[in-house]
Amino acid sequence: PREVVVAAAQMGPVARDAPRAEVVERLLSLLRGAAHRGAELVVFPELALTTFFPRYVIDDDAELDAFFETEMPGPETKVLFDEAARLGVGFQLGYAELTPDGHRYNTAILVERDGRIVSRYRKVHVPGHADEEPWRAFQHLERRYFEPGPGFEVHEAFGGIVGSATCNDRRWPETYRVLGLQGVELVLIGYNTPIHYAPDPGQDRLAGHHNTLVMAAGAYQNGTWVVGVAKGGVEEGVWSLAESQIISPGGEVVARATTEDDELVLALVDLDRCWDYKRTVFNFAQYRLPDRYRLITDL
Ligand code: CDT
Image (cartoon, rainbow, N blue to C red; front, side, top):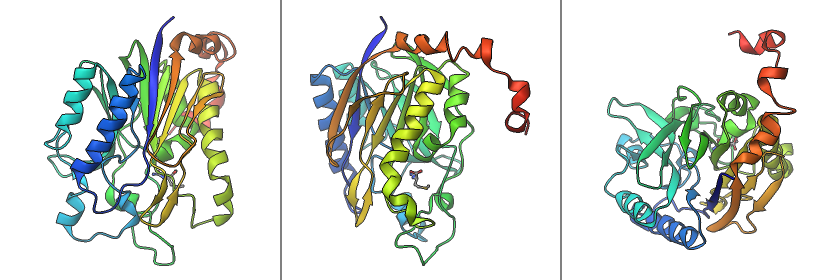
């Protein structure tokens, strides 16, 4: 079997003024713990290096830029790349990316066990709002700070076919289906999900339910493993969902976090199990009828 031990490296809160070096130290500790337990791939959350800064209105460019990385690895993150390569462990890391030509993305980079950068995914579904909305208890200004990325790609890595998605992407069936159509076997998803949803607080009590619901559906309907990794807990007064989890192609949660802190959630992921579904009930070539789906397949 094509087996890979995967660790979801959940993080607790990161303070607004936390120095990068201190956060990287936490990532190193998770990385070493995961390697010690046999992990070959460690998945860190969305925007793992900083607090979830879209909750703030930031007008000062220098202040905003301090939350962004202009190179990866950069001076503060190189130690993580070096240690991972030394341990022979790959990883996915979410961070805010500022490109040389001034574009800003909510990005996740995938790094192989030998330190090679496999892919750089830029979040497609950018949620929230662009202008300050003072009636909210806290802001969700991702649409002020990030452009949508170009789309979903898969890559051969860790002995299988791997794709990435970020937070809000996981709520959209198109995310998994576009990856599924490229044969994805392992989808890696970091998230920061405030439990309070200001436009409709009635949804708050369902935050955990929706998290598992969408990832399990995406896994099953496309015959793929899904790894969901939170930055959770109460960060600068805002409570975010933890509940990191690893979900099989049958849609079952096989491992799940039990805290809202830095915590490793490990599973032995058998990539061959994807084909139980990909060659039967979800054999796309045999059963999909795209011409009946015109409304979603034609722009
Ligand atoms: N980071 C991120 O994308 N968070 C959103 C918050 C809610 S907007 C519906 C999420 O989908 O979890």
